[in-house]
Length: 251
Image (cartoon, rainbow, N blue to C red; front, side):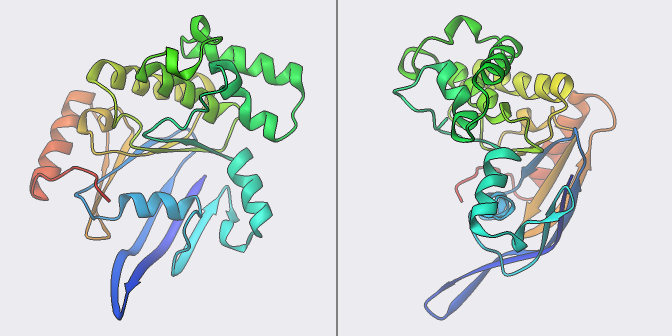
């Protein structure tokens, strides 16, 4: 599904070069729920932006379903982002002037999809994520957790190959955070969604199948859930403690 091969990314400030990603390689299989964690400055957000091609990388390959995205023209990339990738952001990115239902439909509106099919898909997603009762409300009228579940539904409306989630629980309380993670799990189980999530939240990451831990631009460890969630959470906390305990994402 997603293959990242020998990825390098650096930034230059004046004459100083800062190496942010250093030989990153991993794979995400269809239906996986994968998190990326690591200390501030480890390269998590840069990795996510490189995968979406919102920023260029220096060398390496990123393959989405076998397609090398670096070889696509800008208009082709735009189509991939709208139809094959779904995005969930920390600050929701909902349009205030649209209802919940209209926000969910937006990617299909942009792609000029059939209206009847679009509305049927949106209604199904509202049911899956328990937001049918608020679909006619506006973002200002709903809670943070409801906004994020709306954003998850919007990310899924085009049945994308991959959902990229950037700190999706970062602005939420614990109850709302759990509701959003439950939404991802339902998307994985009921809709066969593949999710790649950057997070600083060990509790949220413990629901994933795999966690890629970065340190100073390199993969420190890839942790696979083999037993229950509680044991996996303990393993995550132990690994982050090895890195100094700073798992806040301020990149």
